[in-house]
Image (cartoon, rainbow, N blue to C red; front, side, top):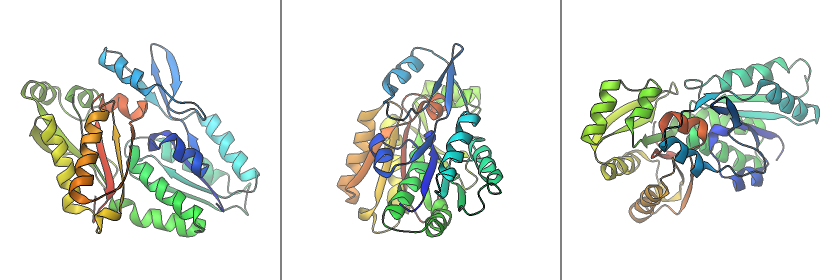
Amino acid sequence: MQFDIVTDSSCNLLDEMIEEFGLHILPLTFMSDGEQFQSYTQGEKSDLQRFYTMMREGKIFTTSLPNQQDSEKLLHQILANGRDILYIGFSSGLSGTYEATAGMLDAMRSEFPTRKIFHVDTRGASMGEGLLVYKAACMARDGATIEETHGWVEANKFNLAHWFTVDDLMYLFRGGRVSRTSAWAGSLLNIKPVLHMDNAGHLIPMEKVRGRRKSIQALFEHMKESAIQPVSDQTVFISHGDCEEDANYLADMIRDKLGVTDIRINYVDPVIGAHSGPGTLALFFLADKR
């Protein structure tokens, strides 16, 4: 690769992908009972199943941006080593991570005038952000320049569809996404929301269905209706909040009915999962529009 790609832990990429492409990850943080944790640690596997078990047991988590001093140190080191940087970041509609990191990079331009520095606000999250990072890393591996790679991500980020559902509306209520009344009523009536990410990078409720299987079916139907053809050639990402069986059910449906063979599945990280809860299921693919 002719340049380094930096992203943040909300991309939810598999560890082997991060290692394969030599990606740099800025870890967001989450806190509980006065203790702070990093959402990603290089070379270590997080016990994400345990995290979701703790949520089910009633543990409350809060979240925060990556440590600014650590981020600045990493970015400075990459540039000092003579490498150019493409930063692909978490939606500014959900977090201040992108704006903080992009601001650091812009401030470093005068110190490193010969280095190329690009950044992209994906207006995406979880493995939607991650799929853009993955595509960029594949381009860089295959010899694309930093300008070409940056241009592709900017041109295609609003074609990266994010469709997801949650199992318990109370987590969205805590995050201010639904009202308390809607959350209680939805829980009593087994109502499951289907949401997507809009072009501003916000989570938007699109429809409501009754029952978990119908909500998973709805994710599939949105892909069937809008995925860029030939859909069978796509790489599809699925992330989940400790509901691997549901993720595999959705993946099998996509394989059987759409002929997709390249499907990657991973956990939703704790920073996003703290707001969406156990049972979150999300589907990401390239579409004619979000």
